[in-house]
Image (cartoon, rainbow, N blue to C red; front, side, top):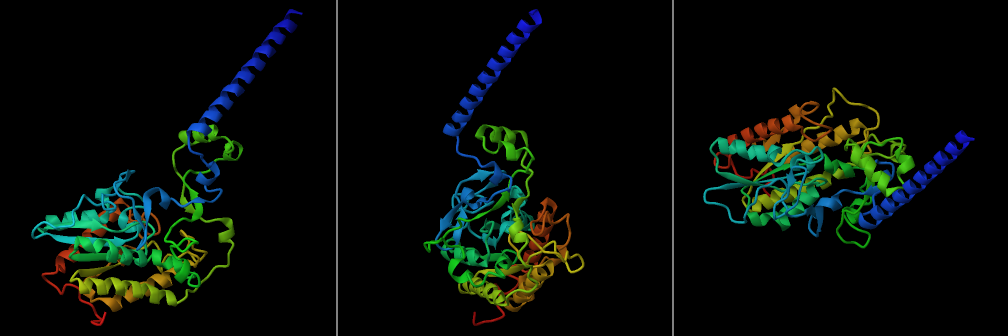
Length: 384
């Protein structure tokens, strides 16, 4: 009888403890829901679609779709008061006898995608090397993640021109190839909202955190989701491709009209540089894809819908287009770096070591072909 009474009191204590724990949990859950913004664990682990990350660091811009928000700082990356990423504070007027370099490009130039600190980006290191070679120079990094030649020209024409750069260095190609099979919708909907306004509000699968089995059980709880995220570091893959997209028929060839669009945008940049006596240098962008090491299966990388061979065909065509626009001394060819996993952290973004190597190659070329040693813009087509 004593054991029976002892068990009754023990069971009663356990029941009280469970009830108090549930009340405490519900109280904390309600407090979290009331005081903190909602969190979608399934979206953070790439199981469901979520808003693209551009909203967090970019503002809409009527001339170039979007540009980095001025005066922000995150994970070693800064944006100055004019919206230039990984660029020191700079004024419109240049110091006496100072040459100003403007870098245009995508995330591989901005130092995002595979994030590198400001001073490690290859444009920053390029300028430091030029200063060590005796050049008086400052710079603007006008690149941004997601940019194509379209955004770069719009930003050059509408904003960056007023900083009066003397030299413009352009590295584009990879992002332009995103649109190779989207030409039917491109002219009217590219970088635009449904109401016709400029925008970048889109949804995609973003794996910021590597998914765990437990996520499916705790995703309903804001409290448990936050505890789970606090206990595990961000080791996700970034943009991921849905199974639905993976099952789409693979394309092996691209619409050649994309080459006309790419060439048109580069020619707009070129003609603007010629009209404003700015030196123009075009960079042939390195990638991890090489003819000797191509995976012939579907090549999925942030929206590409071609086979690896098809993407290489596009890039080769872009390289050839570059050759038709400017003389060889105004082309900086980085293709020798392609396929090197130590130089490229992924398919296109340079690693820390890669940034230093690219900076050396670019600075050596600029030093050799500085405007007082070669024609300032050297267009092949004088009518541009």
